[in-house]
Amino acid sequence: MSFDLVLFGGTGDLAWRKLMPALFQAFRHRTLPEGGRIIAVARDDLSDEQYRSRIKSRFDCVELAKRPTPDEFARFAALLHYLRMDLSQTQDYQRLAQTLNARAADSVVMYVATAPSLFTNVCEQIAAVGLNGPGTRVVLEKPLGHDLRSNRAINDSLRRVLREEQVFRIDHYLGKPSVQNLFALRFGNALFEPLWRRETIANIQITIAEELGVETRGAFYDQTGALRDMVQNHALQLLCAIGMEPPINSGANAIRDEKLKVLQSLKPWTADTIGQHVIRGQYAAGNTQGQAMPGYLQEKGVAPGSNTETFVALRTEISNWRWAGVPFYIRTGKRLAGRDAHIVVNFHPVPHPIFRTPAGVANRLVIHLQPKDGLELHLLAQGAAQHQSEPALSQVHLNLDFEQRFGTERVGAYERLLLDVIAGRLNLFVRSDEQQEAWRWVEPILQHWQDDPVGPRPYAAGSWGPSAASAMIARDGYCWSEEV
Ligand code: BG6
Image (cartoon, rainbow, N blue to C red; front, side, top):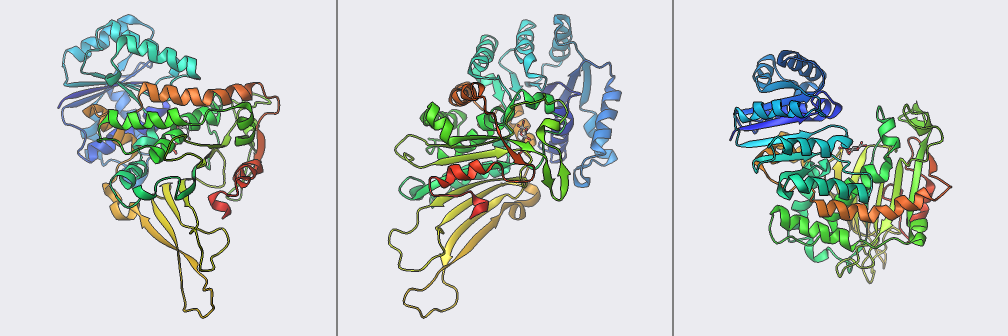
């Protein structure tokens, strides 16, 4: 199958850090279909050769195992082309159309890795020169909008020029092998399904902790914040994967229909529940791994006195028969104690204990997403023989490490997602109604914060966030996984 992949923003950060390395890995793994062309588009005046040597210098800095040999690079570079374009100029799209029409590849992918403000214009211009035919797929990076209204406006204008099946809205968390495994755990095994409900599960906690701060993205992040950057998309997609009903098949729409129902069932917010169940924080100066770190307000690009949150912890519920009354906690933040994304499923204790057990300990399933990728099942067992009338149990863990088990067979999120777009597989991409529903749910929180003069609570860099996040969960009688 021949393909043309047009990369708008070809000299940008995403192309540089994620897309080109992912395309090279697919090439190395021989999963990138043969007969492809990668056409990087940007404003700079570069020849194909100049662009290739930029990419080569990028590859010289990636970790050794992912670096191409000179021969591999020469073969990969033959796929790379460069087209200078001013994205506001129709005649530049006409030149692009000539380049693409001259070859008429089976599949044409337009990856729009530009500033989000250009998304609709690029799509309209693509359509204006007739490049929106059924063989075209358009990939859009998040954020798609800033709130419900702007998201609707973008999706409405996309709908005027493209069919829904042509739009691939990326949430790179869905491409992570660990998230694939979450679907496999739930829908490829009969073991957990009977337990996956309110009768057996006490609460579920989703944590996406980052050790890094805002790095070079201060100006962007200051307009965005953790709720828009992580909760509206990545964390809610994880919540859907955990909470959804088994889809009727593995087709894209079957999966997306079930995810949509979860989003529609999320308990609506009131001013009271936002006040009690949503905690926002902002990192102050602190220490990460013994190294002094500046606070958020000292980061480059951040407005003085900014109220942007770098941490969110919240409690919600999925109001349906399976989950009614079960708290789902979400927590994400920058400059936390470590890079650690995991989901903890806490089961109820046994209904009638006949053994002594450590206080507050019951069965628990930990799904590690990153940096570790695996499953831990916490059970209770009796070690040495005991002679008391009420024997004591202690905790034991069944530990599965997927990285060790599957090793090099696994592919990175962007590699997987790029191959899916080229093949036209929509399973791991987000449909417009899902995205809209997620915006609808976060919107009251955004509005509440806008009117709240108090602002985010400070937390020290290198900590687990503001203590209010622990107090919030403690009110339900639970604690976060690291506090057990
Ligand atoms: C991005 C956010 O979507 O996800 C970043 O914009 C965040 O702020 C990143 O750092 C986290 O992704 P990962 O794959 O490193 O967990």
